[in-house]
Length: 443
View 1 (spheres, rainbow, N blue to C red):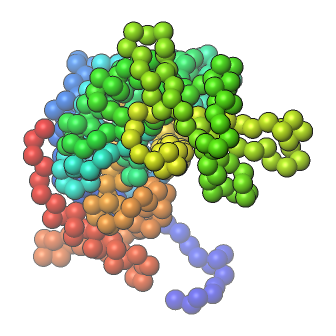
View 2: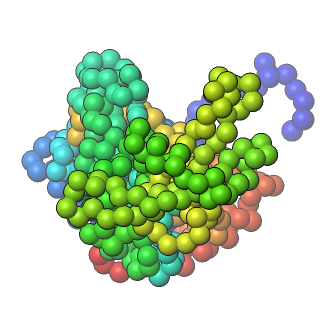
């Protein structure tokens, strides 16, 4: 074919049932089959006598595949029904109307059933080599705002603390890998720490049940600075590093730290920040209060800023019961900000940026399914490609969105993919690796 021609003379027709959009979904679909996603859903999700109860496994897998293909609403799943795409997914692709009925059948208890599925999947994936084993393991807890529009969505009619309407889910994310360990949808008017202690307890139980036997460390921001959270961490033998809320007495204590105790740290401007520590007893009025380490970073005001007129520092402190050097702990606590990368990938890599239903239970199920899709992408990268953190959008561009064509010869199907694809060798190697993973033990 000529490299240059008039596009006006190029005709188009939709007539090939062997073409496959997103043929690269064969990779995560293979991993999902080895993990037993569909069977786990069929085993644990029981919706009762409602209209959408049948074939729950196929419906969840359809929504997961749609999310990995870039779909952010229920109707986008219809793209999976074109051509021969179903042949690379390994399950029956359901229609959007069926998926909508299925999601609207969920109540809070049914969403907890999906949580049971995601917990089992975490254990199976980690048993295949994606987990930390006996190594120390750090995880972050945070919340996020999922903005919605209109007044018809249950749980999202009131304003959030950011003065927009939406939901306010809790998320637990593994440090270094971005795995979503746990997720829970809450109404938009929930304060940041509501239910955090129970959420932490469930997250730790998931991590231990999945096979992590090493020291656990929690990192969190000031929204989770609460006695109940600290007590839950101590009860579960989890070390913690939590940003402390500023108050006048606390600032006085920080300002009383001797100048000689402050140590400069690398910063974007020379001499811009120092770190020091002192002893502090958080929640001193509680009977189980104990003294822990208060580590503080002070930042000099930017030259020319309003704060520079008063020569005042800004202070950023956190309490911790961890052992180690002050500078190392302070640097590690700042890495809590990495949790935002995982949340961003949930919103823009899969479909959490859009909660599609007016029913709270349906949106809770949508959150759980997006977390499963997100993890499936992360595990495909680690277990199949041998890669570290790779965003879902990158995986989609390089692997999942490859177009293909099915042919049949000698009763065998062959998937033909584009010649000279830049990541062809990585794709084929990953497919071989994923197919050789040992079948998971029952959980």
